[in-house]
Amino acid sequence: MTENTPRIPDSLDMQRLQAMQLVARMKETSDRLGMGFIGGFIGPDGQKFVMTNMDDDDSQALLPDELK
Image (cartoon, rainbow, N blue to C red):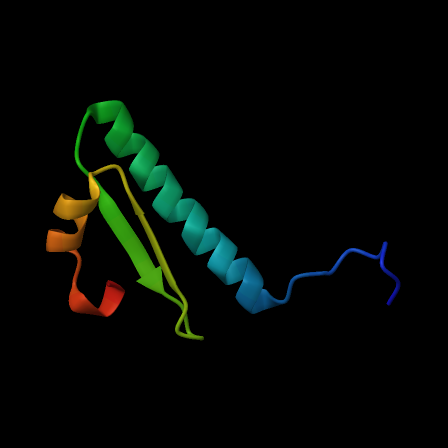
C-alpha cells in the first residue's frame, strides 16, 4: 500500500462511525431544544465515546462508572 492510498475502513470502523454519528445527532437535538445531554457508548474493542453539552462537573456526576 502506498502513502497516497486511502485506508478503507473495515465494518467495525463503520459501525463505530455510525454509532458516533447517532450520538452526535442526539446531542444536536438536545442543543436545539435547550436540554442537557450526555450520551455515549463503549465499543467492542473497549474504546469509549462520550459527548455532552453539560459542564464537566455535572456530566461526571451523571456518567456511569463504566464511561468515566
